[in-house]
Structure formats: C-alpha cells, structure tokens
Length: 247
Ligand SMILES: [Zn+2]
Ligand SMILES: [Zn+2]
Image (tube, rainbow, N blue to C red; front, side):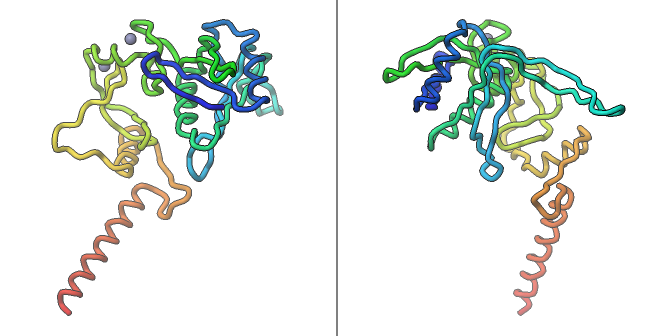
C-alpha cells in the first residue's frame, strides 16, 4: 500500500499497489459507509529497527472481550474479533515512516474512520482519518492529538492546567514530566534548563510512579546500574588523565 497524509484536511489516503491489496480494499468499501470505523487489531514491527512493518485493521464486524476457562483455576480473558474482513497494510520500501505514523494514529484512536473512496492513478483508494476533536468536532490525524482527542486549534486555546505524571513520546518510552491534564500539552521548559535524558526519565519513573524499568539487552540492565557504570567510567577516565599528567 502507498500511504500519504494531508495535514490540511486531516486525512490519510491509502492506495493499493498490487491486485491482492486492491481486492481487499474493494471488498471492504463494498459494505462500509462513510463514518464507519475500521477496528484497530494491532501492528507488527521489526525488533531490530523498531519500525512498524504491518498495520492490521478490520472492516466491519465487531470486537469484544471474551473469557474462557482454561482449567479449574485459570480463566483467560482476551479480545475476540467477530465477522468483518481483516486487512493487512504493508508498505513498499521508503514508506515505513508513514506506516508507523498511521499505525500510531490508529492505535490511539482505536481504529481509523472511513471517509470515502478516491481514485488515485485509476486505483480505488481509501480516505481515512483518526478521530474527531471532543471540543469542536474537527478531524485529527496526529497521533499525539488523537490520544487526547483534541485538535491543535483547541490546544492553542486551552487554559492549561499542568500536573506531574507519566509521559511518553517518540524518544522517551516512559518518563515523568509536567503536562496539561485537559489537552495533554507538555509544559514548556524554562529557558536554559536542559531536557532530561532517557536514564533520568527512567529513574524518575521508578521514584515517582513506581514503574520499574529493565533493559533486557544491556548490561547493567537497570537505570541505576547504567548511572553507576557511567560514574565508574568517568572516574576511570579522570584517573587516567591524572596518570598521564604525572607522566
Ligand atoms: Zn478542536
Ligand atoms: Zn491544555
């Protein structure tokens, strides 16, 4: 699929690139009405590059929580999908960034809203958006704004009410920061104050949120361990400098 995003009208356009993809899209638009939502079923990503490789959506049908008894003591509750058709969105090389963006929009919106069909180079293409602003009803595609369900124009007008809590973003998986509880906008840093690094964010998350962070592929595998290792390394560098000076 080829995906483009038009910020000015808050839409993504998804164009099939081969016959198989075209078939799926044609089947989906056969029974979807504008305003219907594709259900977000998840995404796959590459462990090494952390890039999204596939977005999975469902057209039609429904999702619901279902519990089943595995044994006398174990009951498993999971989301099940009934009916509809499943569509996997993959992208040709070079389109990974856009696929990652649409996957996050879908994740925070609980799926994508089907708006209609347009023809791009003679191919039936899907036009979708993320969600609608809870204040003014404008369509939103930015994933950060979709998470809060509020558009940029309304964020600009918000009388922010900042509080301290868990934050996350493109570079911080979990951390602590100040943000507005009404619109999600982060509090601007005072001039001259540097941004916390990732390890400092992890330490703050442990201290203030009670969330423990581990690095399965690093040694030491905790933020404290990393800080200690860095301190020992700096000490070692300094002692070497002293030795060099003496010599
Ligand atoms: Zn708005
Ligand atoms: Zn605000």
